[in-house]
Length: 219
Image 1: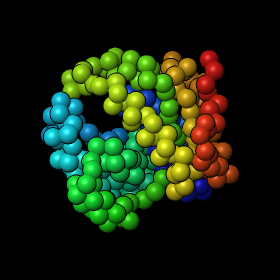
Image 2 (image 1 turned 120 degrees about the horizontal axis):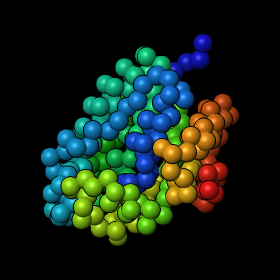
Image 3 (image 1 turned 120 degrees about the vertical axis):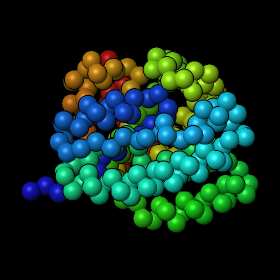
Image 4 (image 1 turned 60 degrees about the vertical axis):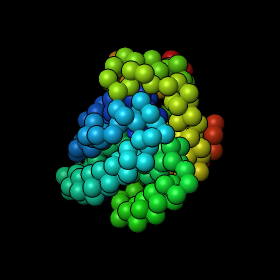
């Protein structure tokens, strides 16, 4: 019997992580793990004034993500395969983008202590999209605290994600360009991603340089 595998979906805000997570779950069975970001009481204030509220927002996320994954990842894997819409390691990516100086140093000390206790995924699906696509999707879902989202911030975040996964070696990475496909209306595209994930799990495929392989970039 195949041992349970931990599959994670990652990418910048608005790229479609949660949507693909839900669509992939039936392909593998088991359960889904969805990030609970709405509980962060500083999030709306952060988007209104990032410099002022960055540290409180980031520290809350760090501790929340730690407790969530520490508890729910083992529980999910006990029931079979687990598909998540985030990885714990991405928390540091946001911290490096929004913190500096003593606040970043303090954050990194706490993050290092917690990260050692978190299960690393068996494979990550890294979703990418151009800035116009990301901003369009953010506007379409119309979350109140995202209505005045700064395109420059999303552009910086996308670059940070590219750099992060360019050097990511903790597990195999499958990179998918989502701009040309609408997964909810395209079962074939979901099947292709599932096939790439299975290949990565079997072959240990690493994609560590950009531009990365993107088999779904053409309609």
